[in-house]
Image 1 (tube, helix red, strand yellow):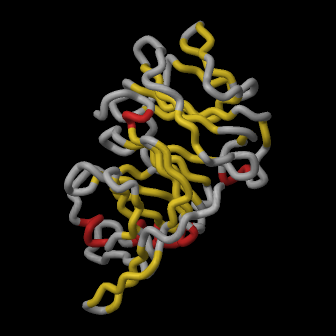
Image 2 (image 1 turned 90 degrees about the vertical axis):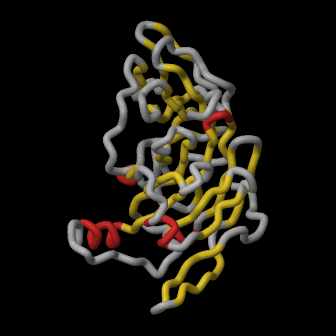
Image 3 (image 1 turned 180 degrees about the vertical axis):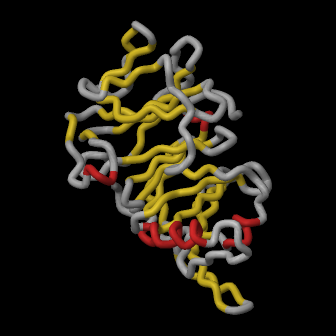
Amino acid sequence: MPPAHGAVGFAVAAVIGVIVVAAGCRQASAQSGVACFETPEWAEPGGLELRADASGEGVLIRHRTTAERLREDYHQGSPVEVHSPRSAVALYDPASGRLDGAVDLLWREAGTEVVDCDRSSAAPVTPFVLDARGRTLRFRDRAIRAAGGNVLMLVAAPGGERVAVLSAAGSAAEAILPFLGRGGAAGTHYHQVFLRDHGTEQGEAVVLPLTSEEVGLSGCWSADGRYMIYADVLYNQLCIVQSQAAGGDRR
């Protein structure tokens, strides 16, 4: 990853009756329609959750560690709320291109659909087929050429009309921590969007300044289909792609 350009966010620590704001995520790079950030405070095993903010323009991202998820599962259905002293919530504002830490209250009062990136049922990607051995992509009986030679991941958008394709231009590589994510590849990584009805590409490929050569990547659509989030499975960094950057109009 390119060096960070300074802190652009803030973390949250809760004190009785008071919310104290302190430093958070750092922007690593940005291009039209895609912004990437280093997220060192989230570098713990766990999972991400997404929801639109109350305005419907930005996206809220919440990181939960494995221990926090277990506590939430234990208290599910009870009035007990699990709070974290970490910077667990961040808000991405597409107008400014910033990822800023946010208070838990902003998450709880957003009133929008939540996507649990690790636990939500994935929409089907058929008739697209990923050949895991050859890392090639097909649509029915037709070969599809991805921007990178190695196709790593297919993720269907909500509603199932679009499929995000992650590919890499370099040689295939086995992740050092394979149990944390699928095997990856070296070289430049690309995000593309294809239509499920006839297999054509929508928009142009977007370059992601992430790599899966050593640690695998995960991908997740927001519930409204406006954003695709890629993160390494150790949550050290993530990229946020707006759907119009590769995929035409927002939905």
